[in-house]
Image 1 (tube, rainbow, N blue to C red):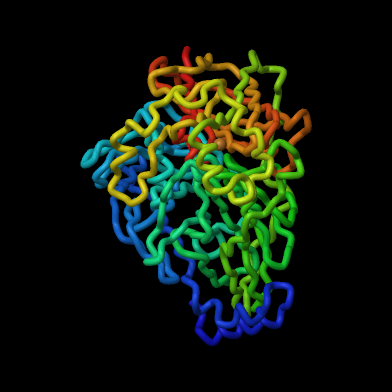
Image 2 (spheres, rainbow, N blue to C red):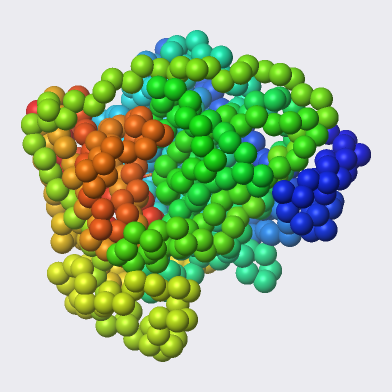
Length: 545
Ligand code: C2O
Ligand code: CU
Ligand code: CU
């Protein structure tokens, strides 16, 4: 750790650097924010060649720092969970104990595994019981994560902390000169935003508007701490970024606009580092970046939160709702050099769309009717709704059902409505709003798509709504073929499991279903804006022989 004197020197350097922020506001900044909590690194234990992890989900009181404290959900922690380290090719078993007083699930986001081990809405863990899935790690080295996936309540359980990261390692990655000293120059950052009440407790209170936009907070919470700081001892830092927000789109930048290198997407390393000054991540997406720090020169990782109200036109996309202070980085006066970024990373085969046996189409729509419109006019129409540009006409657009459509208005799920944590919200199917894929809201008893194992497919995702939706597919890592016919940008050309689809955009994905069949148990595809998912923007597919 660094001394208080060094921090003050850092603060003084910050004040001398006009590009960062107004100096007056930042004097003494490091002393006032929490140090970045680094989740404990969990290696599990080897039992007969199987790596076994014990995870216990429980409710507790968490200290977010900066005077914020309140009820939360943790996995062997008061908020969030440990980083699980796994090696490609080995078999893991997870013993998940639910000590909450409500049902939950735990999903391994990004993993290729049997549907029964997926941890989606069908693998419910009743209070006081243990769920023990086992699977082989068939991923490339990368950053993955686990989180609640309870039907209708994913948003609330994740909001209160039920999420953590997974590091997968493999030989290809191990051979590269990359920073990999956990917590020193290789740091997981679970970036979220939260709202706190006057007592400093986190608040999750849904209303029709926050369901429509997704629930957005005004304070950054990183690994469970409000806008923390990190003391850097190495010249190159590898930051593993997870957008773990319920709904916010984050455009990450540094306060001085310095360049950094993107080295990995959701499912693994890119072919080579890609230089940029800004990187957009939607909920569920991950990236790994390398950033060079200068001795004794503090700077800040920021996230511009883009307005979810985009409208149908392209120019609505960049509007910034707020800037979040994600992480203050204080380099020590003398730094270890550490490895320099390599020029090449891994070999990524070019996608082969010609091999696809079929194309499926997924149309994302939001339908809004009565109560939503009443809510709007009561508050005085579009001017008051936090920038509803492009929302004109939303009342009449979208899904086939307005009020009285599919779903159970008012939230019939007792688990969703009566959770022990504050802010259960109005339930999973808000009256008058529909969130659909191909005109249908999620139905646990309906299989929407049947995929043949051993085939490649093109999935064409079309957004016919005025809001962006991060489309996520379980079981596979896919490649993005094109966005409205155009090749994706360099950092999106690697392995992906979540892709942001802008209003009126058509994105084509190439998916390969290599193994694991189950005619009964489905995998999910859904919008990763958790309030949209909970409200029904989700479907199910099975992979069959
Ligand atoms: Cu990260 Cu279906 O979820
Ligand atoms: Cu997932
Ligand atoms: Cu959505």
